[in-house]
Image (cartoon, rainbow over all chains, first blue to last red; front, side, top):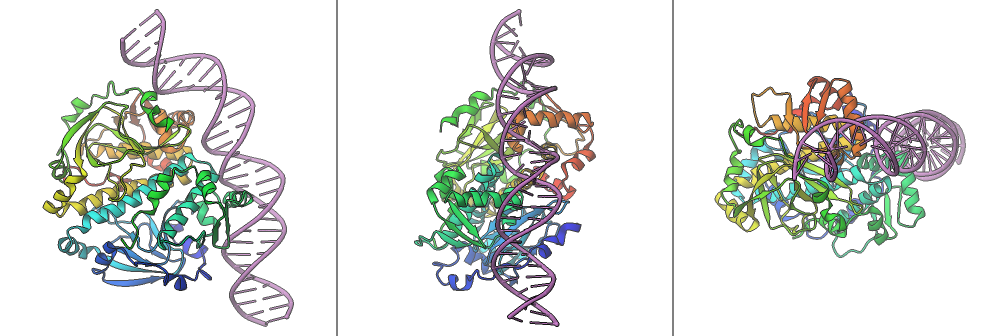
Length: 258
Length: 258
DNA sequence: CGCTTACTTGAACCTTGTCAAGTCATGTGG
DNA sequence: CCACATGACTTGACAAGGTTCAAGTAAGCG
């Protein structure tokens, strides 16, 4: 309760220099078909400033959201004010999908950069699934993909060393990000996170993330400095992360334009 | 690769004395409606002996499964032979649902007790969702519930002490189990796990689970001995687990008979 | 009975957390 | 343009929670 509003204040807007707007033009194919269908049932759009919440733990939820632009993350809170980041959402994600019966969010969603979502109220979903019978199954596939990511995240946090966890997270974000610009062979990206965010996602402290990061850099594997991620040695990164390539491939999911 | 078959051999059948058969008669309402609909499209049933796998990581998957009877768990493997338990599946669960594009399982499913599943081949799903347009959305809700459980599991492993993790797991299993027999006020249940299973689920070693368990017992909170779980002080358990009651409630999900 | 599997317990060790101080880059108001 | 505030990143010393290794006990099965 008390801690509920701490994140917004502790985390200032961080997205100077992300230059999303200019990069935006490069993205091919735009939204996947499913999302275009869903978005047709939106009641409105909403812009969220970096560091602000789209919804918070404990709030009643009466809508789902399609993330049109920007990065967000899902998090859960502990009584002592620490938090756990559950998932990073990239453009094209569907947020706020809860099983029908649950009406209270158990986790929150916060913007990492300035972001834009379409709001699709629950009351429109009945009409949506009547007029587009295939959409239910496709939503199930999307949620299933998120669940699999959560499962991979789980074994990372549960059974791997700090070094492996950090490597895995950077790899995941890199792979998912690059999926949005197919054909591009960039090994460098704008990653709108602080080391503290990485800690919150991997179950480590910011301090320890720092140590791991500079060890990875010393070994010539990755460089992460002031929101810029550079993969120096992709093969070695996969190796250090201890992930089987099949799994890495599965993170990418559908290509948006397909 | 090498480790793939270790679980079956390391984990002998454990379900002597679970007496599922006699308890079975008490369960009210049977399967939820969704599952009855899905099961109508099954190709066949399959019985799995305790300790055997329904499917393994790396296998191609061409079907989904409705767990009719028995307990199972989903797990992922590490190269060194350790594993992480991702989810415990109780009767009524749907297993093997992957996003359409993924054809290779990244995790495995193993029986904790002798178990029975209905096999619904992917090729029947098209017909299913045509003839029952509502089923897609309902499947999405089921997967979404699993995803939320994974998210709670995630913050438990990422941010909580060994004591809290173990307490949370026992609480979760207890709540989900009791949901199957509404009205019953039992504080005792057959829990077909070893301490090692608890360790694999919570990201701890079996040895440390043992220490935690006996400390919880010393404090008069829970007793877990030879596959029998007794909740001595439910309120204190929720307290130790450090979980907000709203979340505990959400684990229960739909009541099967509704 | 003797075997196997699970459960117990102790001691040494190590990875990661905690605390605390300090640096660097950026933004702000005088 | 400088002094100062702020948020993020660095680094070191020390503590602690959990792991590892190893040995031993209890319960159930053939």
